[in-house]
Length: 616
Ligand code: GDP
Image (cartoon, rainbow, N blue to C red; front, side):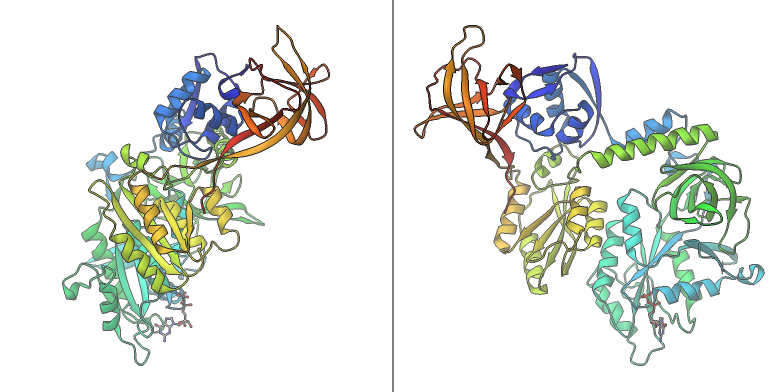
């Protein structure tokens, strides 16, 4: 049903009981998508209901209710988690798998899952090799021969053989990309720092990423075989970043190693196990249908789509029907890192799965479904949801403009910022000044990462994962990154003057940073003839002088350059006998201005709309 409505725009209407489900944090764009409306039209409708919002701004439930009532929709809010859960619920699949959601009796210890991070060339890859060689079970199996994206090693620890799972992709990039997609895989991080080089930018970046994710860190001080290596200096440097070594009264274990010579790797593995035992409750229920995360996937010529999945709960068996992301299938075979077939895989075990319909993405969750058909149905629904999400305009995860609203609703209590600048001096100055803003008790301002140089994909990934806003000081997002940020709804703000940045952050925290709207002229027409009709009101026979005249837009009437009327609706538009939506420059048309009658020949009808003003 169409009805010319508020503000002179046409929006498809519901009959009052039409239920529309929108995600929490959805924008007008998302909603427009669901009801097949033009987002700009909804902005106008909302404007006339007394609320200012942009098409890409997250709206709260109340605003959606007001809008829904006006347009005849019964709006129900759902969170993305609810949406996902509902999908699985509808197939009778339980998604909960954490320690809290299980009976204590059902839980069994599981190995820690470790990611190796650090600055380039500090020895991450070499360390992963050395760890592989350290595997006590290596002798029996012929060693780790296959790259499947993760592997397990075993270590005698306190008289028992313990396993540790390593993600075989060094660096924090993959970690953060997965986390940005909601997958939490890593339990512990090993931060590699070369003793002959010291703390470097990516050391700090990696550290920030791990700390933002609350992942405990074990520090491997590498390359101690190199002459002039100074392991103590590394300990000292890292205290600045809240990593205080145990021997200095802190809680972080530091182990001096040489990846090249295979020195002290055993102690490093012990440190991982000790940290896991002290800091984490690593248990899972092995007696249920498996679920976990795809950590690597590819298309193999001979074997088709394969994915390495990390089991997080339950036991995966050959023959299980699984779904991961938009891919599904029956587990035809499972291979481990030794290239050997395995029949079943328990929690924390990585296995390469054969038999999927397509290649999932790293970070997709996988679950076992009751049967093939269900697996396929879930995958199809997922795909549809993904497509919708991609179609809907990116929404801001967190933006300065809606910060205060988010704070008020308790959705966030922290403003996370990432600072990038052209020189370290300005980044430091900006950080100092920001930290001095009096933010009050309700909100925390955290700077989770800072650095010199252009805004990288990594920065954007971290912002996605941590709902952070990026401030660029005399630097821009490089290449395609601006598009990625836009698509993913990461807000980047550019500044060239420090006080301006400070002022805006301060205003945002006080809820004073409102979107600004500006008028954009759409077109103008000159009245050449006036037809008076008692039934339809006056029709202005006009010629379009510039742009185009659209039905439903707002108009202003000027006579000799003086405004005689504002905010009039272009209620009807005709070319000859036909109703039309728009008429372009140079063409004649009949414009119906509703009940507005004060028209004269040569009056100018100018139409306009309100658009959000991009900030400088
Ligand atoms: P990544 O970029 O962090 O993965 O670093 P790599 O593992 O590729 O190592 C970078 C370079 O440092 C390589 O040439 C390694 O052989 C060397 N390297 C790594 N670990 C050690 C070590 O313990 N001692 C010495 N002397 N060289 C090492």
